[in-house]
Image 1 (spheres, one colour):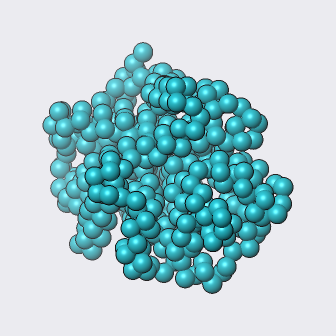
Image 2 (image 1 turned 90 degrees about the vertical axis):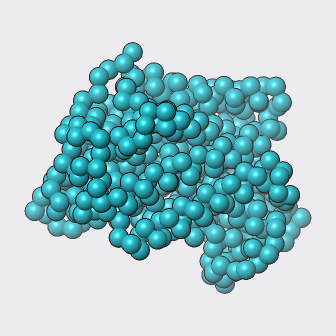
Image 3 (image 1 turned 180 degrees about the horizontal axis):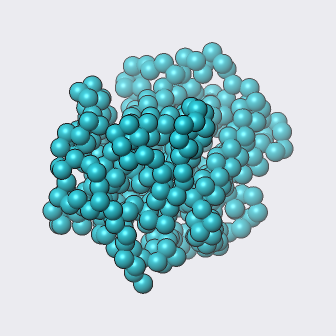
Length: 454
């Protein structure tokens, strides 16, 4: 059931233990040619794609509950938290781009090439749990959407989501560009649905503008702070850091200092544009919730199903709820595509072994599917949202273990050479990392009821 991993000799600095490293995502590595001697826009088009696959993780169903709660309870105030979270994500994904392109290693491979074996196995187990938790959120989100649209029970909806494993295999076999195209199509579907929702909701434009300005009220109001921490904690997905550092290597750029510098520039533009689109989606969810529910009898809406059943009546049209559910289904399916791909990258990178793709993805899906079926089967469908929240807490526990090595590796000249982080990037990056770790720890403690969180 395992295949040998092809290797390459890296041209990076001698700060690593091994000069040879396995190809990251070997079936797609260097499969997309980057034209030489062409203009800016053609090169940008060649590099465009990985950023949008990463951005999917920033608008997955796990974010919907916190965005809905933030908008319905506190209006537009927490838009500033979504903006700050997005800026943090842009910085971290830029560092993933630098690591992958400059060293020829994805983050999992870099950990394996730096840390002793016990630490590598510990990090791998944590990462697998995080990917399973993320996949759990996508399964539940997709199942809820199938229930809302077609009346399919959640239990069967969870089982149906296994089919997307076969879709991934088919698309990746045809070429990585096909996978990117499907992801982009689903993202545009989500964006189109929420563009219509925003038009129907008729939000207060002045309130939106004020919401993007941070306010001290977020820190003074315990309930608002708790939701804000939830938004921050669910924004940066740990598997995205592993994923991005790998899929940027699907481009066949020149393996020279100049070629790598150019690749980093265009890949960063790609991810920044994609994450700004994710900012629009997350902001739109909060804005729709604020315009539709805040200040009404429904301002305590916290579940996706509640929002769905209320939207038509609040907005006065019969298709608002349908658009909402279609966007949710597209979000769930999109995230499962990239989440299972990240699972393959993590196993190959940390353990240097390669399972057959169909087996690897079925294992990832089974790890997430079993708890979903057990909880829904035993406790009923009303526990689905609670399970989704629990998956986000599990993700928050692992995030620091991905950010820390990323900052360490990209900050060492022996590993990065001329691409090492300058002092101001180090300052920003470590600040972001420590803030994320601190907020996620608080979210975890609040979830456990140890700090009296609201």
